[in-house]
Image (cartoon, rainbow, N blue to C red; front, top):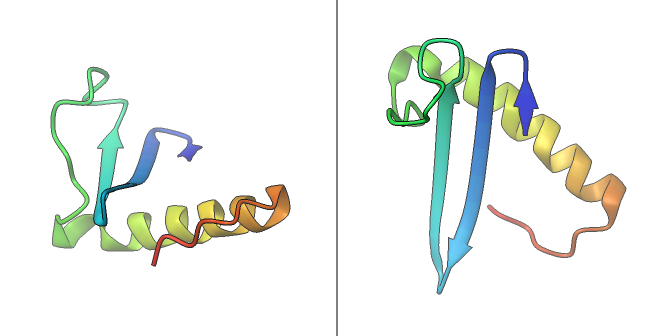
Length: 65
């Protein structure tokens, strides 16, 4: 899910759920995962809501959380 300068990625590999959050403006090569940065939790939560809504609209059967 992308919104402005932010990109959120969530995936599940063999039951291991991973979230990545990148600031594409300052980190265009996506080298620094900010998903666990306390200062970025509001941004993460907003993007997670957008991603959840998109999954529902597209009929994605996978629930990440």
